[in-house]
Image 1 (spheres, helix red, strand yellow):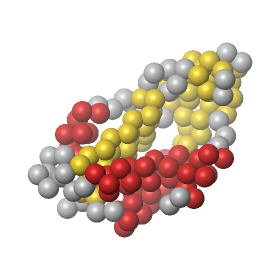
Image 2: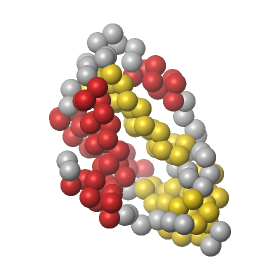
Image 3: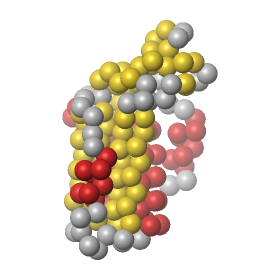
Image 4: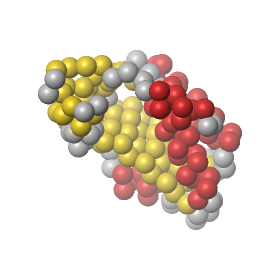
Length: 150
């Protein structure tokens, strides 16, 4: 049994509802849910908001490919990837990656893999509003290094 929920949306998401969906099958022995939020500091500057853009067809295809690769590598029961777009303020939820499996090792690894690939391979463009003005966020070397372990 493998079910997948992928959504790119402006509205917020309910972590608890997604966790309940991930774990409703009694075969599930482990679930890992990661939630990323808008930080108030980035690169040494105060951040007041983050604007995320995407190209829908491209983004959804990339997310489906990332999840498909994770399903090949680990025995996943369910996986959820929810990513928000539009204007987000400090403290708002940006992304959720949730994975349920039989064992914790698979759940941790699959979740980290999906998040690492999402951060580097999914086509989202991010613009921060800081106390120094607006700036587009570039991919970091540490994000590329995270991919190399997989």
